[in-house]
Length: 325
Ligand code: MLT
Image (cartoon, rainbow, N blue to C red; front, side, top):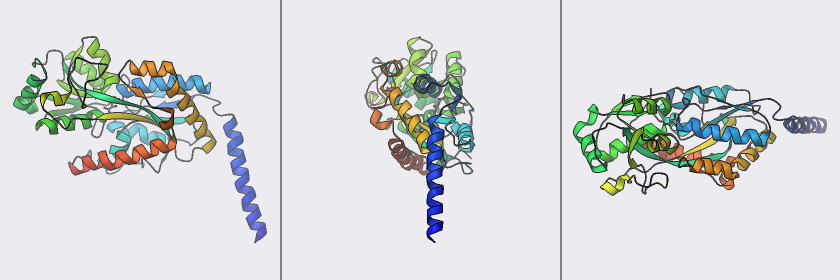
C-alpha cells in the first residue's frame, strides 16, 4: 500500500518537474497566434498589435494565422485540436461565447477545451455606411432604414459575431429587418462598403475609425451610450431618441486545454507586460480600443468574462431564436 502511494507521488513529482524543466526552454520555436476572422478586420488588427508586443517579451517569433469562417468557429476548432504545448494560441472575442449557442454541432467547448491566458482589450462599435448612402444625418438614417428595411443590406462577420450582434441590436432598436450579408470577417465587408457593394455595417472601432477618418466610409452613430473620443462628431444612437444599442467588444487570449501551467504562466506574464506597454496602449488608443489593466490580463479574469458572455449574450441570442445551423 505505502509502496504504491510513494510510487504515485514520485510519478506526480516527476511530471511536475519535467513540465517545469520543459517550460524553462519555452518558447524555443515560433508560436502561431490564430485570429479566426479574415485578415484586415478589427480582430486581425488587434491581434497583430499583441503578436508584435508578445514576440518582443518572449524573444520568439509569433506568426498570425487567419483560418476564417463560420463566425470564428473554424479557426477556434483548429486551436482546440492543436497540441497543448503553448505554440498554438487563439485570440478571440464574444463569438467564443456566442458560438456555443449558435452552432448545434460545435466540435469544441469554449470552456472545457481551452486554457485562458488573459484578457487583452475592450472597445466600442460604430454604425457606418457606404459614402453614397442617401441619409444626411442620424435621424434621416433611422427614417431611411425604417422606410426601406430589406432593401438595405447589412454586412456582418457571421451569425454570432460582434458585427452580427451589433446588427441585431440595431434592427431590434429600430424595429426593422434588414437584408443580412455574411462575410468571413469585416475586413472584406469594409472593402465592399468602401466599394459601395453593401450599404451598412456595425463594426469595432479598430476596423471603422481608420476608413472613417480617411473619408472612405461615413459614420452615423456610436453603438453605445456616449460619443467616442476617437469620433467626437458622431452622435450616440440615444441622441436620436433610440435606446437598446449599447455594445462593447473584449478580446482574450487562449491556449488549448492541457497546456502546462508553467507555459501558461509565461504567456500570461508576456500578455501582462504587453497590456502595460505604453506603445501598445497608444497604438490601440489611436483606433479607439483600450488595453485592459494588468489585473484583468489573467486567466481567472478571462474565465469570469467568458462565463458572463455565455450567460448573457448567448442567452440573448437563444431567446431571440437566432441559430447558425
Ligand atoms: C466580428 O466579430 O465582427 C469580427 O471581429 C470581425 C473581424 O474581426 O473581422
